[in-house]
Length: 130
Image (cartoon, rainbow, N blue to C red; front, side, top):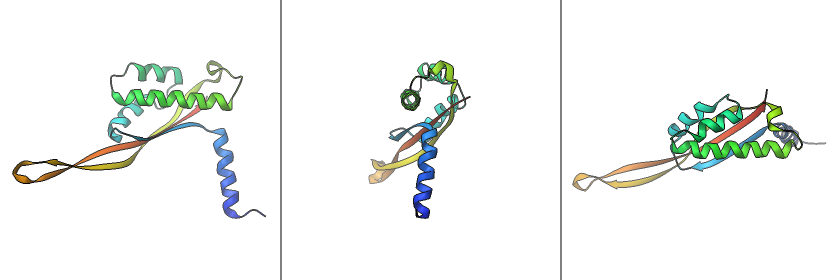
């Protein structure tokens, strides 16, 4: 008989088979800057989102564009023989979490030091079909 933990793990495993997602970890830009770009594409159809990201001037949009392409590739591996155009893929969820913060010291006047926090983030993109 399977234990409670095994049953829970199987349930999570089955739910992940139906989800199409990609994760970017330890991206060296602040979560606040990444969220500005993530808000542009949340709930948008995939091809339109790629266009928006391609022509956005922000640095974070390059990384998010690559992540969306990765999520599409993950969708294609789970749905072989189905065309993207027919499936009506859209970005269901995009969320940006704070990752580790590298703490550095910067010299300040009169022999003091100020702490610089170099932030990074984790981004998750989840696709779904309408």
